[in-house]
Length: 560
Image (tube, rainbow, N blue to C red; front, side, top):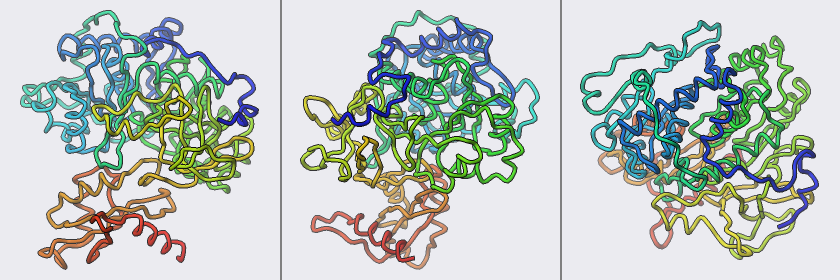
């Protein structure tokens, strides 16, 4: 490993940082002890103090143990949008010594069923606007379901624009749902139970986000309290976060970036999270002005929209010290505008679910544009030849591999996928990221392309094999191949090339496929473009030559 990057570490940190060897829930206990009356989370002008936050997590944890039958190491699904309930349920699951399985709120019943059955979860949390999607699992995969209504945490009036799904009053559960194991969040809290003592330690499983892969089925990334703690602590150290920090959290918390920056990191620091469940550029600016927000984690598309707001100069945004994130390279013109108008550089980083967020960050004192940054504390990152695994010199493109304390233990119940994901180099266990990149003479990393087959749609990872597997369930589809298409707003979008069954040729249109997709898969996976073809190119072994189709599309886009 080259040490060229060490010269560019933030001046206030060391290359190696000892991490707390404790259960993640201890961070909440400590912050609640230190700052009991301070706002842990602010949700449309409604605050939840650290003392209340801890008290409610304990009550929910006790219900999980005493009614839900949740024992140490059990997995529990968490299926909500950003909300106080998401944050509370996350820490309640930890307090019950169980494992959080965060689920994308855009997932539909079939995708939910896979996460439940694969993880073995018997208990779930869901919000009422998502109840219809998870109901089919009640009484089958799931024995218990806690249903939350976001409006329960809107006791005080607000001048911020509240989305309808947030403002919707609590609906009574049906007798059938109650009989199948559903219970209202408010009833769980009202029971005021006391949990058993915390028994887990740093090497117990903590959180298991699901990520898709080239096999088409999402895989659970097994993270311990120890590996989760690394990036819980690192972000605050890197960017000088402290108990005076105020973070605007709008990135989804089911995803590791939003989870670490807006939930775990802020609780560790005793800071305050100002929470938005959906991106709204005016609401974001008003929150910055109203609460003195110091940092925002935003994907590139959000920053572009934020800077394009014609009313931006109407807001007092001087409290902002950092805007960072990723998802796609920041356009140079937008970065320049951000520097001129806000006095800030966009802090891009690099990480994945398998590393529980960042392995690389741009140093705040010396960021580079359209750059992944440099390896953070105790991370050994290299660009290697994908075949020989030999480290490549600066400027040469190869696969990025990483070794560090934030690496997952492996994929849940999938030893073969785990074996393929890791490789040993110089006696150390490295994760093969599947991303191609290069380094420069100063040790900064730059993304080049993807070795794996993945589409990055506005920061969401879409795996073509998974979408193809779903499309094959349509009665008209004989064969399917999914590729990426450049998109000015999303970075990339999804295109499906389909061979129809003979009985459906000339009898079904592209829009019918799109409409069916809306009902059967998460919105970000839906093919925005559908093209019917007579056949798909195949190799001698009968495998569809997706790379050939992707290259044709790239050539077409370049010509246009």
